[in-house]
Amino acid sequence: MTSEARRNKIKNVIRVASGNFLEMYDFMVFGYYAAAIGRTFFPKGSEFASLMLALMTFGAGFLMRPLGALILGAYIDKRGRRAGLILTLGLMSIGTISIACVPGYAAIGIAAPVLVLAGRLVQGFSAGVELGGVSVYLSEIATPGHKGFYVAWQSASQQLAVVFAALLGVLLNSQLNKGQMDDFGWRIPLLVGCLIIPFLFLIRRSLAETDEFQSRKRHPGTSEIFRSVAANWRLVLMGTMLVTMTTVSFYFITAYTPTFGKTALHLADKDNLIVTLCVGISNFIWLPLMGALSDKVGRRPLLIAFTVLALLTAYPALLWLVASASFSRLLMVELWLSFIYGSYNGAMVVYLTEIMPPDVRASGFSLAYSLATALFGGFTPAIATYLIEATHNKAMPGVWLSCAAAVGLIATLWSSNGSSREAAPSAVAEPA
Figure 1 (tube, rainbow, N blue to C red):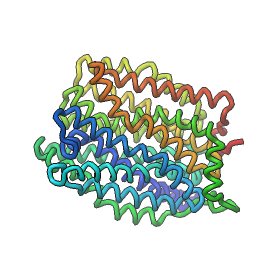
Figure 2 (tube, one colour; figure 1 turned 180 degrees about the vertical axis):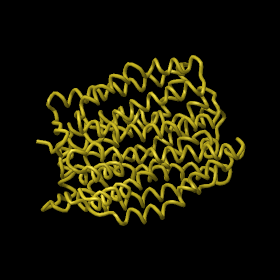
Figure 3 (cartoon, rainbow, N blue to C red; figure 1 turned 30 degrees about the vertical axis):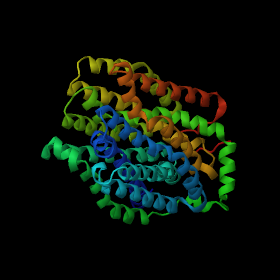
Figure 4 (cartoon, rainbow, N blue to C red; figure 1 turned 120 degrees about the vertical axis):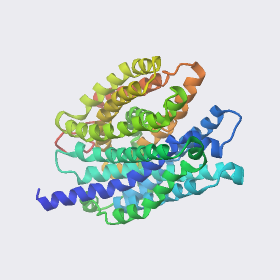
C-alpha cells in the first residue's frame, strides 16, 4: 500500500469513528452523573429511588436500539454506509440537545422527566445502528489480513469518549463543589457535546462510500432485508449472546463505575472519575492490540480464553475490592476487567461482522448488538444497583458479570460446533 493510500485509510477510520465518539460520550455523561440527574428530574423520598429512576431512564434508551437496528440498518444496507451514518449522527444530536437543555422537575414538573426520557429514546434509536454501521464500514475498507485491527477501532473510538468525559468530570469536580455539580455542573459536559456536533457533521459528510457496497450489482429492498434477517435468526441469536459479554462488562467498567464507587464503596467522586479515565485509556490500548492478535491466531481462541477468565475471576475480584475498598483496589480491579473486556471485544466485534450475510450485514449485526444491549448491557447499572440493595452484598455485580461471560462462552462454543463458520484470519469472511 502506498503512503497516500495509507493516509486515506487513516482519514476514513477517523471520519467514520467520529459519530461513535458522540454516541458514547452522551451515554457516559448520563451514566457518570446519574445521581445528580436523578435528583434533578426524578425527585423522590429516597436517594435510592431517585437513582434507580435515573438508571432505568438510562436503560430505557437501549430499548429503542433493536427498532433502530431494524429500520436504520435496512436503510444502510439499501442506501449505503455513508448516508446511514450521517442520518444516525443527526438523530443522536437531537437527543443530546434535548437532555442538555431541559429544565429540572422543580421548574416544569412532570414534563421534565418526560422530555429527558424522549431524548434518551431518540438517542437509543439512532445508536441502534451506529455501532453496526461503523463496524461494517471498517470491515469493508480493511486491508486483507487486518480486519480485526481495523474493526477494533470502532470500539477504540468509544474509549476516547470515555476518557474525555471522565477527564472533563475530574476538572469540574476540582473547580465546583458538590452543590454546584448537582445544581448545574452535570449539564456542562452535555453542553460541550452540543458544541462539538457541527464539527462531527463536517467530518462525517466527507466520508466516502465503501468499494464493496458500490461493487454490488443490486441492493435488496427493505422487505427483502427484513425477510433475510428473519431467515438468519439463529445467527442473530448467536450474535446477541456473543455481545452480552461485551456490553455488560463495558457498561459496568465505564458508565457504572462512578456510581458504584460513590454509592457502594463511598469513595470520592474525583477518585472514581480518575479510575474511569484510566479504564478508558486501558480499553483504548487493548482493543486494537487484541483485534490485531485475532488476525494472527483467529477469533475463537480469544473468545473462549477471556470468557473463561471472566467467569472465574469477576466475582472473586469484586469480593477482594469490597473487603477493603480503596482507590488503589478499585483501580486494579477495573483495569483487570478492562483487560478482559478489551481482549474479548477486540476479537468479538470483527467476528460478528464475519458471520452475517453481506446483504444484511449492517442490519443483522446491529440487531444482534442492540438486543444484547437492550436486554442486558444498558440495564447493567440498574441491575447492579438493585442486586447490591437486595442482597446487601456489594460484590454481587461480579455474579452478573460472570453470568454474561457464561452466555458469551456458550455462544462461542455453539459457533464452534458448526452453526457458523469463521474465516481464516487473513481473509474476508462470508457465510456459506
